[in-house]
Image (cartoon, rainbow, N blue to C red; front, side):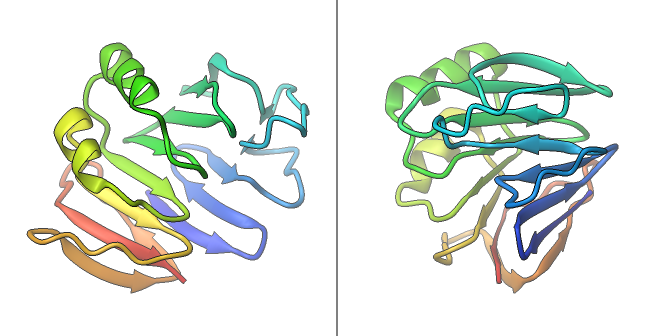
Length: 157
């Protein structure tokens, strides 16, 4: 699986391509929009809370100031753009258990994600995150081996 920063957001290349908050919607791929005011939900654009499945990829959307999404492809990825309330983190933990990866513009409290969700990989887009005992790397593209997840933080630049 590859995760890269592109001009219009973040692109996840897994069993299918997934775009996170793209400026331009891709009609052949999965698009996830966290802004509730956009209201563009259709076959390939997910912009509402709820549970979905498309081409073997499970997507769960969660309410909030901006929506958060859990994506399960070859790994599980939690994506959000504003801090998540403890209630939402608890809801995710109860419904899905451990999460492999978190992608967010910045993460202020990584401890809750490690303790409650068992997160191994953090990817930030705006502000780098450094955690002791986690490897750190800056890159425009990240290659993740789903069979060998190691504790790491990445800053997509």
